[in-house]
Length: 316
Image 1 (tube, rainbow, N blue to C red):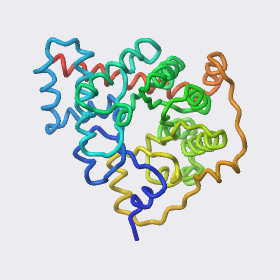
Image 2 (image 1 turned 30 degrees about the horizontal axis):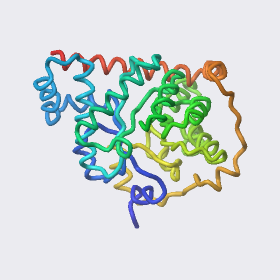
Image 3 (image 1 turned 90 degrees about the horizontal axis):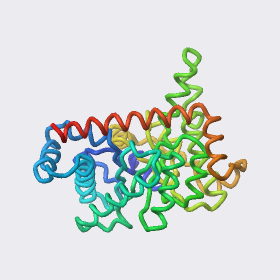
């Protein structure tokens, strides 16, 4: 019997969610995603510290923001040596509400990759927070041939706006949605009743997947931010799933048969969904969703904090 991970690879593109590129060879993912938190975690390990020290040594006269981008691209380049597909590299979260600054930073990341001989149209995705401003930046970048991964996505309205912007890929966050509902329910939370397909984070991704397939939207859906392997199994068949090394190891060690619900045929059988167009409709719908509003703000704050810490390591 093939492992659960191998079964998953038959129906979904498996992506490694880590900055630890040495952990990737064991699981043979197609793609990989990084973010400031993952890179910060990696450079605090002894085996990766030379990458940070090397950037500091070679580019000490560069501004810190440029040194940081060079470090992100250094990690991305090393990851691309190990995988056949794409790596996602994130724009500084401090620019999440500035469309032009996001466009400029994305272009710079792409130029840094190109300087290393990387085919960016085929192998690089630029990660941008799913704010209104971030989505508009991604729309412009896609028109230039710079493909984007819209992250920190918690709601249907964010997914709809990304689809209208024709972005390459979105990353709805399963685990953080689960966290919010579990915390809000408190002592009333029933773990068994909210597991698998009943998990609120899983439900959100399944709804987005159904909406995209029903409307023939080309944007790829990649479930992200998992808390347990049950969430991953419940999303088998999704376009892509980005998974931490710990959960990849768990799936590799298991041979439990997968049940695959997510197919275009399944999507067509689901109830249709409708969303408002335009900035006002986006902001109103997002504001009406307490979970999405809170988790988007919290996620940006967390990435900003880790970006500032990474800056501090480069300044030290």
